[in-house]
Image 1: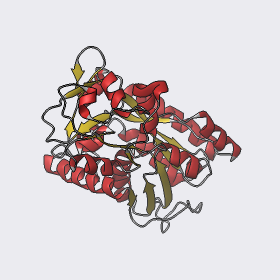
Image 2: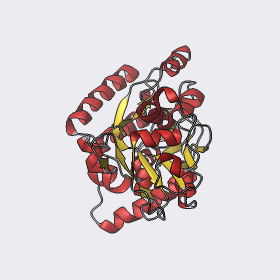
Image 3: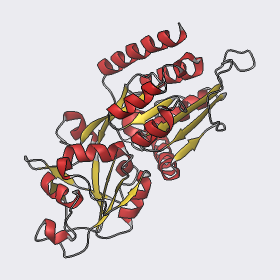
Length: 334
């Protein structure tokens, strides 16, 4: 299957497929297995790839990884992927750094305590840039009284001692209780939101937390006075059910988009996305080949931007990531 899509209908079909995948929170293609088989990466002696690939981590990276794996698995039907949306931190702590998965997706860099856990378990890895995201704040589409928030107002809504009603945030907003939907504390998006918006004030516990971003989308779509935040891809999949807010960091409101994320204009909520392959796993040829394919696809505008909703990597970034990957594969395979 070609990784670029010539017709608009193909892109629409892929987008619908990704929306369904996001709702499910896990993807199994050609059968799921729980661990890499470590066996001969051949299929009937014809040289095709076979074996399992186990991936956990970020719900934000999940749609991109799923789309790339969908294409790869069609080309290599002997490969059995198991992709789960566990949150960046949940993936590192519960699966990757304990040696149970081959990749961990992340919407923020690996943290020192996670590095230590990986080291304690002998898990070596490399960090690969996957794309750029515009972390998006959404409200119900019926909320015609709001189009944007300042970063200070956004902090009022989400800080540890938050505003309880909308008119506490801005006088002209309605006197209605704020219904919050957001990322769980095992999520890299949660960590990034604290870093970019909340700082030392911390994150409120008065909200409906989930690792499934499609659940946030559904919650906001079903509640007139709701607000939520997640990766741009989930707004991209639900543009008629949600309303994205412009964010004003001092120079006027800027709406989230591929263009404003790419230019750096959408600040401070533009962020890089990552995947972390295990160096030991790269010793298996089918995993090494998938890692190469993933890096190749990071510049694919039709897939990354058109189908999923993130900013593709530049050619320069792709070349740097591929060299890092090839060095790791050489280390793993000798």
